[in-house]
Image: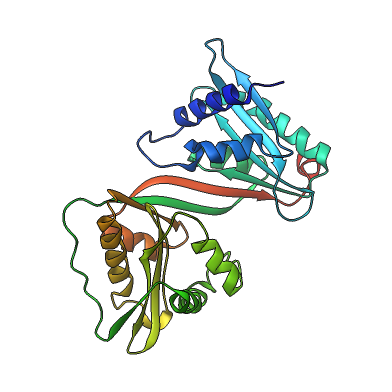
Length: 295
């Protein structure tokens, strides 16, 4: 029987070693995420040991947890300087995919690099999702909030949650990859976690009309949305300033957020407000069975 605790420690050390920015943020260094990815139900893994007792590479293949049994998820890591091991690691993963008769394969990369994009693209996968983690240090005093004239704040509760969903749909339905969640599903996904911060989450009206919302959890701004009719009026800036002020009052020293790389307007706005990039993540997919791609 494998010693799961020892193997998890080895995988965590590899995860920390392969990050391009050791000071940056990455879910790949989260123990709970590593446990789910490499030790979850139905997951098989391959560890390549070095003579010094550390890992040179790690890969896992397992069920996606949603969709059909033929949907698989892959996670893999290579220690810097051991990129030559990639062909062997890829062959092992492809064999597992073929054996399962997979029709859809997803690759989860929580510490994405340009080299990794090149490797997976060459293997027949397509980058279908990419976002950056950004951070803002909360030093100093609270920042004055410049709300547009006629703004009314709705503190978090059932009314704010329902109104925020309406803004969310108006703000994001035309974005690539919009999931189409129901009102209850969206609210549960954003506020059902124990880390959700109701005191730092809010919805705003301008002249009585729904204008924007911000939803936060411990150390994170999870989502910010502004209705199309109220864009370029300072609503997003005011929401972010208010939300981070509220998180500062809880003792938070830094706040992070995720922003999709196909949203240059939001990226530029967060840079302008003093946020900096601290991580990169992505998802690849391949619909055809691997054997069809390899022929």
